[in-house]
Image (tube, rainbow, N blue to C red; front, side):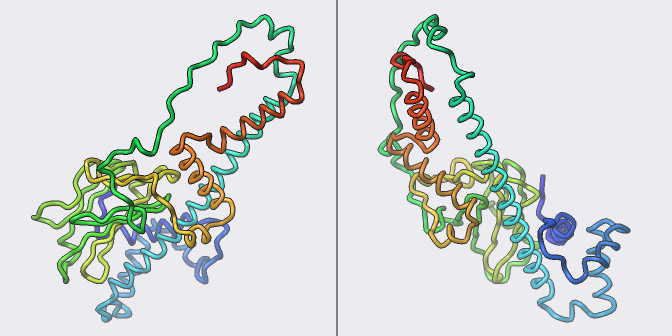
Length: 314
């Protein structure tokens, strides 16, 4: 459970300092701060630093100090999320490639396949009846077309998404302060709105989120912005809260400019997923199914003595 309070952003900043990726460049005060963190818990250190600046250097003489600190934490959090996403995507690609190589070795190694004599003792498998392929025309008529951010613009709020995050924006009366906001985010649910009024969001999330990596802020004094970090960062959401109007995810297409910002491995993974999504919508084989077919063709060509006419191919 993660209840986003006035102190969460400071806690996330301390967590960012403690868990920063080892490949990132060192900051100018890392040595000093590291010694302090060893003596105090990260949140206690942040609290002491803020109190020190308040007492000794009149931190809040600048009326915008709270907003600026919040913006610093938000920026640091976004960087942390992006770094974790890139690392996770690289691991997923490596795991996929490893599994693919293992499958190829199993298929192409004759010692692991039955000989002609042994295969003749096996009962032929009946040809399976073809299963009906999903069609794009079967999508629900009431599904919305995605907006430019691959989300939807609804009556009381709008939302956009990437593969890793969902961003929700709720209009506020100008001048609304933080203490009037309710924003409670759990793994599978969300509550958001103003205290004493009907909640704008209140229900079960479409998909699970990483509650500890979600946060909110008030932008320009008139918009409540909520960032949700997806638990599964390889799928598109069709809505934020179950029961709300849904979009047609088959029409989701990331902007080319966004794809170009990704590293080569991550971009390859995203493009592969988009290709597979379009293939399924047209009832055609996915990239993995095409690879299996190619491997089988090569194996059949290398072993013409074997009879594949009654083979059951999964």
